[in-house]
Amino acid sequence: MPSITNFSLSLDKFNDLGTFSEGDTISGKVSLELTNRSRILSLCVKAKGDSDSKWKQRFSDTHSGYLRTFRRHERLFKEKEVIVSEESKTTLPPGTHDFPFSVAIPSRPLPSSFRGAYGSVAYNLEATLRRPAKKPREVQHEISLSSKCVLMPSSVEQSQTRYRNKAQQALSTDREVYSPGDEILVTAKIHNSSVRELEPIFLLKRVEKYHSRHHSKIEVNCLHTVFKDAVKSCSRRDEACALQVPADAALTVDHCEVLSVRFYVQLSLDALPAYLEGEVPVVIVARDALPGSAESRVPNSPGLTTA
Image: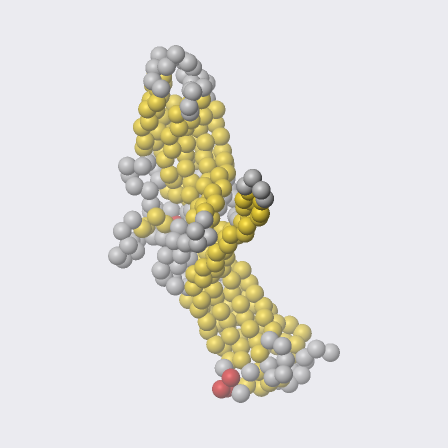
């Protein structure tokens, strides 16, 4: 019969979403159930964050082709709490033993958790138990981090005017910051001086950028599209629509050298020889990080907003 029948890690609930943010403290307990008396060399809990990217790209010339793999790793942070140290020379009797712990997440800006096609930002809590002449036992628990420190788009970028081929559009959104499940109210002023009808197409897109040391890869995903009736030749129209942020949408990812996730509202005027496209950036954060929910400023960090 094994001497350890249970080695588990449980977390105290921090908020209704079950997420953590910069500066929060992760607390919980490590549970250990023993069938006989056991010597413990050490027991520790580590919280860590890592970002990774990996993709393959085929290169070819007139003679041959080859497949190359690009990747990059960044350690975002690592914090450790020693619960039982080697110097303590601890011996535990049979039975169930609970060890409370608390590990602080750094207060500096961190990227939100994310998993994409070619990379991820992941945060984990790991407990490690070491005993004499035994292989170390480990148990992990993934945690979700919702950053409250995001790079805000400038007010100049929130509205945009474009000209091309005798057509003009002015695009704007009702605000800059949204959360999953929200509606983005978009307005546009369209002036069609061309000889063709132009079909307005509104869309919300997510742009993921993955980086290795010297190469990058871009992945674009369309989250919501709205088609409007064509604007006739030599006419003007004010157009409005609501774009839905999916309830399960990822969050904006900043402060990461390996990858970034950005969101844009775009208006395309179809039927031109070259599309007339305009876009404005928007930020997606967790609901408790929306402006107005006890927000504050990150000291000495211009352009950063935190809640």
